Image 1 (cartoon, rainbow, N blue to C red):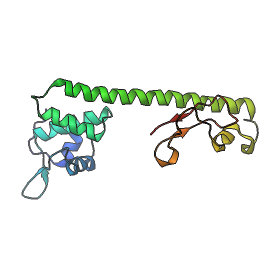
Image 2: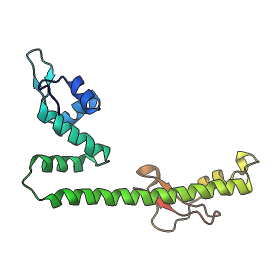
Image 3: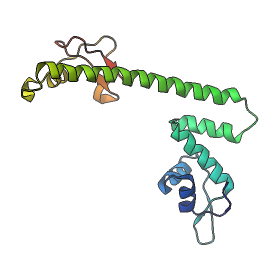
Image 4: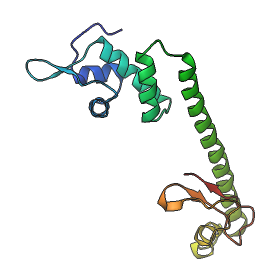
Length: 171
């Protein structure tokens, strides 16, 4: 627990192991209340600020998006609500993480197929004959809905003449 009730923003950042701009950002978006000001205009933070900032940092360390952190902070500060609300937010985030892991496994398999294809067919040749370059530049065949590509997510799809490549899209 913090012993000093009047920490500067720099001292608070050091104790919580975050950056000063992060603290300012959290104040700006309302996750952290604006600090009180000393007579010299410097921000002063107390124990409650330290505890709240540490909670926010831990939520972010676990990858919770800002909107979910906002909800968790509300639950953190309002202790008379049902614990299931916290559990439900954690479950929602867990589901998202698991979906991303599955996407990364598919991405790994696709990249492995790229590398194996190149090793078997063309790795001693020129880039103009590279199967990876060919696959990435060919019209994609999809096994489901087309990915978003540059417009808002990642999309990897096997080329028309590259059987074995599986469509992966993230949005």
